[in-house]
Length: 413
Image 1 (cartoon, rainbow, N blue to C red):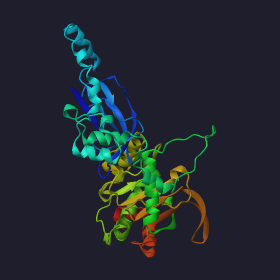
Image 2: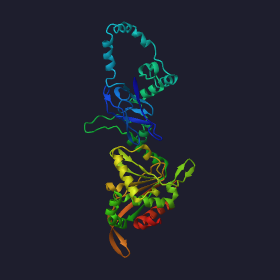
Image 3: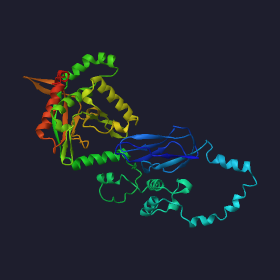
């Protein structure tokens, strides 16, 4: 008896993945629920566990291949000994009768004359893609080739690249041959990196994107943070960072300027009366944006705790797909990498993204005096189709007021 290993449901709007690597080789014993293969989607990396104990008898899709939801990845044979175990048992149980099947194997050459039985859907897909059913491993009853078998065979072909449209957004037209150079290294783009490239180009091609800037004096927030640093961490078990202040300030500004929290849907504008704020997190694989659901109802401690958890799980590749979808607004902090100023790109279909930057002391005029103050540049990129310039500037001014006078956040002003 064999058990199939199939591509699980990957989440909302995700229908395909790339086989990143196999943790086991064919013939190796596996335990139930043991990680077998790692799949990489355009959002997260996830592991597929063994549905049963036994031996990995077949790997149907090699690493680097693209697969659809429900496609066959491989099979597990019952028992740790797998196929080798029954083969050894046959001669031991009846040495004389077993040679009898050998003569029957002689007529075997007649088998190639007949095509294996295939379902109508399987035959059509195979014919459309110029595949022979005889060359496709069958998993159906009585050796029947199923639609899933054909799709798995297509996904296993290295030339089949479902992400080609994404790459086409990066480099249009066929590329000229590139000679090998020992000083260069070629690395295939991960599915996440391809998806990032696709979405960034999509934002530029679709939205009328514009960026407005302002600067904020961080003196009061820094003083407040320093004053309550120890007591806050002692009570809540998490450090008080700057991000919670900006999330709170952004929500207040979004309530005043609802267009920045909305999106264009066909010929309609969808205004969202909820505030799911995405916080960009850098990982070795690329940028991901986990979402703080209901950010308007979260305390400072809850925001800091969730952001810390997001960061850790993002680096470990443990974020769930539903944590990366459905945001209404995004905040990106390039300041942690030393960025002084940048123009962030929208995260479609959102209409606004806030860019935070490095806090740096600069000379500013306070009354009649020039003082050195810790200043941060802020950048708001927005979709000009839905957000007017006045609204964008007002949003940044309101956010600036909240950060420079943090009591406003407590009084909802």
